[in-house]
Length: 245
Image (cartoon, rainbow, N blue to C red):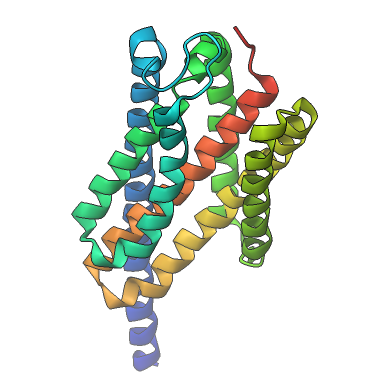
């Protein structure tokens, strides 16, 4: 009986330690993501509200991108793929620096929204996105249902969206853009819940190893995934509900 009590006590202490570590890990994920968001919107606002700076990347009247604008538009996608391929070679500090640099480049690519849409509608859509993101992420964190099976379908959906968006650059079809925006909101809503649960499960699976370097890089990668979910959901909602200038 004493031995069983000891086992329960040790097990309970270990569970409490993992819970505390998980909370700290998620706080780091959300904190890093929030800093990235601040960088993105600060850069986007600074460039988007300055005709001189915006003209470096786009025609200030038509908002059509020039050569540098096209580079900036696709640079975040290239950086994401590069980050995923090279993160094992980075230290946790280097990975965090890369993430913040990525957030700044994303801000450059989004700067045009401050010319195309009213400031009030941008703020309203940001608030809607924040509320939706918080609810979806909370669901992913607290649900007992295993939603890992969503991953393959959602990733295929993202690939389909990218292809459709590239095609529509040339077609310029409002109907296709409307369909892409609706599907985009749904796909990234699902990814928000999926990624949150994955971050939680990955931490629990690796917590016993106490590998601080791995945990640090995992927090940055988790922040990047949730950041992308938020930004994409925001942009698709802005296409649907934003009031144009």
